[in-house]
Image 1 (tube, rainbow, N blue to C red):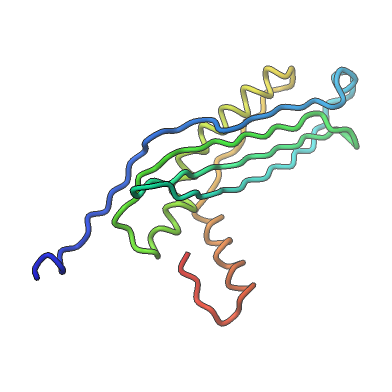
Image 2: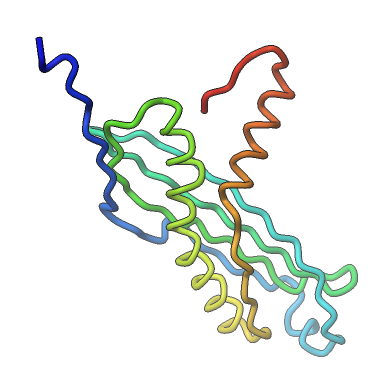
Length: 156
């Protein structure tokens, strides 16, 4: 009976971090290189969680950056940075922030580096992505879920 009351030990570990997919497009080259460089940057982030087996989860952080000069697209960069994480012993309330904030925060520096390398190798000025507050993004996501379904309590 004492075993039933024993708290489950929380376990977190990084099994693997890898680039799942990446692309770089310059649809208006070489003409874009002769235009005045006044870029407008559109930056989008997303995450995807895929449960695997034995408390393993694949978390994928998707970054998409579109840079335009006027009405012309200078370049489009997409990087899907993924990781396989062991997550066990966490409650449902704890799992949401782990997969929605903690793990993406680990993956972001890898995605940022890949974006910077692709842009520079594409012949454009270096693009350094600012740090992202994944805790705030996750809280915003929860708030949006609550607004979509008023009167329900969200634990994700």
